[in-house]
Length: 239
Image 1 (tube, rainbow, N blue to C red):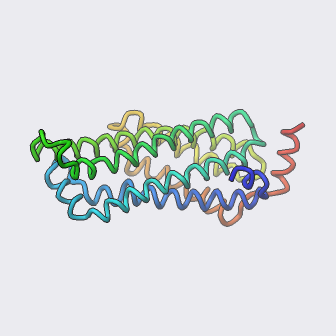
Image 2: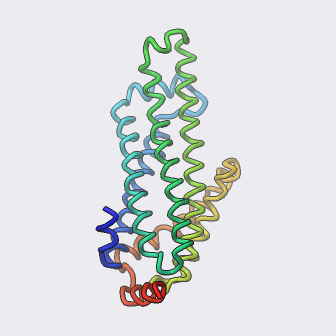
């Protein structure tokens, strides 16, 4: 896979990066946010457990979408590294390492998502617990899932700041895209302290993320990059 990415043209890499960004956003959002929030009743373990068991296929779909999102995120990260390494190889490598850390947290988030269903179907391994305790344990893992997702968003925010800087310094992408992405990243960094992020989410973080991610995504898919300028900057970097 990496060999094919390296050999592809810069414009094709850019468009594939945009497609992977879009697919990651759709799968992760529907899996981790939309479906999860539809089933979880805040502070009510019994109602949450009943929702999960009543809509088990939907819960499995949420898990599957969350996990598929990780695959798209890894591909997106690899493509963006290949695109931006001519700007500054060291910073691009650091950004790639940061987003891979985020992808690892995203994977952990996916499996913590699945844990409540396994607990509710555990049977004899948890027979010493009452029904209320089992339901409370399932809700606890959903809270851990939420906290893990917050850590993932923090790493994603750090990646956005680094990548925004690289885009700003590039000659083959509009600088304004880098500025918007960097601002979006600063919003995600507040998830290091989730109460602050929750307070600022609407409208500040939501608007900043939309301005930072959607224009970049559309530009990459529709326009790609200026291939000639990319090759010139890549040749200068090699020299």
